[in-house]
Image (cartoon, rainbow, N blue to C red):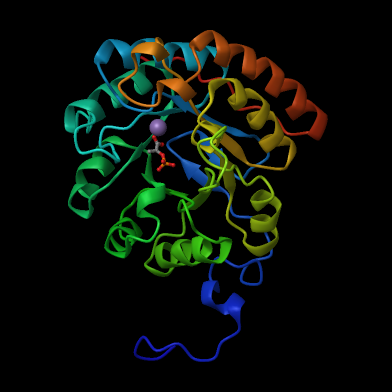
Length: 292
Ligand code: PEP
Ligand code: MN
C-alpha cells in the first residue's frame, strides 16, 4: 500500500497483521490483572445489557462472580436504535460498574461509542467494547488503537468475516495488538431469533487469524431460552470465551430484558459449561477471589 492506494495484494494481505500467516502461535490477550482471552482457560463475561443503578451492579456482580464468571459487562453508553430509548448513565454508570467489579475481583468490559469518550472509558474499564454498529466506525477504531487497553471487537451486523478482520487490522495497525473478536450474530431473515448466530465463524476465524474469538449468545439469539444452548455450542465449537447478559430482574431491565438470564439461570448455565469445558479439555476461569 502506498499513499492509501491498495496494490493488487492478495485478499489475505488486507489483514496481514492479524492473519495466521503473520503469527503462527495464537495470541493471548490479558485483561485486567488476572484474566486472559485465548489462553488455556475460557473467559466468561457476564452482566446486564445496561448499567442501571449501583444496586443492580452490586447484585449482578456478586451473583456472576459466585457462579464463575471472571469479567463483568454492562453498558454505560448505549447504542439504541430508538433515540427515545435509555441511552445509558455515562460516567456514573462506569463508576458503578468499576466499583462492583472491584468488590468481586472481576475485570470490566464496557462499550465505548464515541471517540471523544475513549479517554474517559479507559479510566474505568479493563477492556473497551466496540459494538456491532461501530465495527466500521474508523475514527473510533483509530482512537481505541491508540488506547492503552485491550479491545473487544464485535462483528458488524451485516459484516463478512473479511470485513471484520480488516476492522481488527485497523486497530492492530494503529498500534494496539490487544484485540479479541466477538461473534454476536448477523442480520438474518427469521423472526424467531433476533440475529443469526454464526458459530461456523469461530473455526473460520481461527483458521484465518491468531486473535482470540469469543461468542455473544445473548445478542446472537435475542431469546433467553436460546442463550444456554448456544453458549455450550460456542464453547464446544472452540470459542475462547463467551459474553452473556444477566440481570437480577429481566422483566424490569432498561434494555434487552428478553435475552437476559437471571442469576439463577446463569448459575445453572455455568454448571453445564463446566461439563462441556471438561469434555474438550478447556479449564473454566479461575474463581474470582472476592477482592476488597
Ligand atoms: C451490548 O453488548 O449490549 C450491545 C449493544 O451489543 P451489540 O453491539 O452486539 O448489539
Ligand atoms: Mn444488550
